[in-house]
Length: 590
Image (cartoon, rainbow, N blue to C red; front, side, top):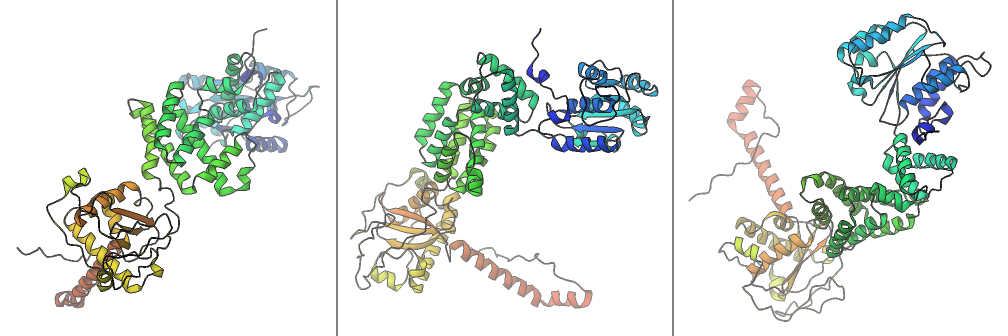
């Protein structure tokens, strides 16, 4: 006997054998039991989820006569009567299937409708099944509208389509529509386990999970892939064989990539990508598996024990990664991997594109430890001494203190130095207390600083930023970092800023701002600029916004007090449109 593929051999023959479409089975079963039968049904959904199968089971339910030949319409067709056997074999004269993909013209539809005037020959109902009905031409749709709306009592229409948006609304309104859903991977894997057990074939659970994910909701695709896996594995379904057959990425590879991302180890990340290139792992499959793993990590982080109940063998590894990665970092990585899949086809080398997508996570991810709470630094006790500072605290973030300022050096960042103008800015004063104490170390927490000293630091920083910005020395993210930060500590060998935005506090913007400041202070490469993440008050950006609000309020008041405006409002009922007033900046005089 010729071999019958699994997708045909295990096609459901009753509603009870249907998998993953309980909502459709329940509605049809209740309608059959109660006798409330519609004259036209429309089944929609993606390929391989049971549209044609449901149509055939419905035809058997309408025409089944039972084992003894005396049965009626039922939701449990017997499968042994002549009608059930003939429908399963495709030779029942009163059940007609029309493939609209190859018979889409009005002539084919008219030939089908001509049979509608004749009563059933063998069964209780005539059933016309039109597959891929959206492929019919507009003329063909119009030809069937009247019969579809008022068919004879013995005629039932069953339409199936993968694209219901292309079906005219005039047809949709005449049908009872059921949307068959793609099946979850777990449901597919469970069904494959039952099928292979019936076939007496050994299968590893991890291999079935791979097949369930690869099927993408289609049971027919899953059974076809299982046939292929049996042949590939020599009669067994093993995980390594299925992974090689599908070109799937090992979860270990993806977990290693995530560990390198969590550790901010770019060298290791690039080495892992090159190793995957050598093994022939697909770049697109890598990002797809990375998205799947990040999704599980996010669910575990937010759902807690509900997600921890996963029975997969890699559940422990997922839990460990969920502890290493911050929730916001997981969301960022998921977005980068998801959108990075569209870039692979644009690059001449997909592995180079994969490397760039993964390295992009370093550019946007918050620096390690950036979200920790700011720590305090001892207050300087040298109010009457000059060029003296207290010893640094033991906290690793404390800036080193020198008794003398560092020697100026002409070396600076090449890119920044090329763009600098020949302008020398004087260091703004920070108030009497600061001038007496020199560059003393202050507390990094604003709540522990004297209010006057914090205000003096804010004034000094705002003046620095305004001067540098006016001179065109601040660009891009370095400019935003300067505008949105506040100065919380200064000493001879470095300053400390506080910024509420972790992205701006990364190494790139901080180093560019450090080079600009060091150049104008006459400091060398040893001069440091540190940025801590935390709430920042009285920043240059906030001061600019406050000044603009004040100027806008003054402009609105000037308009309201203008005699001409008041006359127009009084005599002609005019009104000032809200939001239409802008402060006027007069041109600078020569």
